Length: 494
Image 1 (cartoon, rainbow, N blue to C red):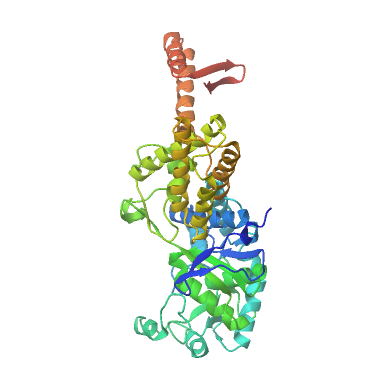
Image 2: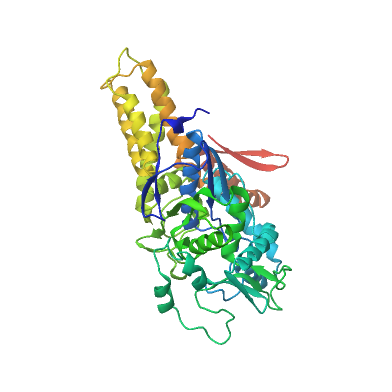
């Protein structure tokens, strides 16, 4: 892999400083990146997919530049309570109780769903995908260190981080730009049931109530770790006490990432991360996605078209292309019209790439491919600006069509450079997958044809050969051949 990073200099918007900064890894040629993964108690939703897609594209680009990247994306399979006030049930345990199954059955089901959806969108797997339950020992050791350093206290078997004491020597709130005084002012008073000294304190370890299913032994009680602690334990184990990039959704900035910084500084007396990156939210038809209002769509429904908010099925390539047309720090409005426009654009791009092999070359070029290539790099170097990169790819589409129409010329050397560059950025960096949008409806087509095969079999059993032949002939007329064999009837398309 050529060390392209030595010729290309990246700027990253750092949520900590609130500005773009030149990217300089801690170790030359190596990048450590941690991204908060899903809590696996339900099907992955499209907002999650968009966030992970942003970091998948960043991972791809860093790898393309020749960095050796260790990308860690965790699975939260315990410890994430229903709200951020350390109250309510563990989300996974609640799901398990409602469905009367083991918590790890819930975890397994939705982890498999998560991987299946990401595979369909052509995600690269992370370098390491640790689970919270696989790192209980590390979390207990971190809590011991935080207690020893004077920033945590134990009450009735639970351990809490002392935010006010930490803030005397450190800056709690520096990532989300909040100050503790405002937090105190905006927080309700603790009721008599709470073990916390202050409402701002957060749990490092919670004692399990008798009915709580998920529990582990610790020096303080049988219980479970706090949600924020999990990421600190897993990121430091695999990336060290100080690493390059930490990413996640904008909604995690406070309190989750703020608490991660506090925990790490309380343990290791240094800031854990150089560049904090946050992907913005996904809305739908101008409003927040919400199951309660019906304004939502599941990733799988994009591929089948089985959702009232869209008029047809879309391929994974089109859906990915649509999402990458917005910068990761921008709000993205998911609409059917947007998808339809993206489908047209996606097909134009794929058609132009297919035309590359048939272009005639000339002794000279009327276009500057070298400058265009650097524009593609400049877009990604500017805080991974995929919309600008896509605009540059369409500049190449325009050139390809001009060459086809004999309105521009290209040399063989430049054509080779154009081919390599457009393929690299389209497929390797953006992670798009070629294929017509019609492929998205294959699942629906298969189900419809299977139903017709079943009706045809019933017609034959009833000796209604006229209907049987009609079903076969009508399918053949639209290019679907039925093949009768000893093991039943199959079909093929031409």
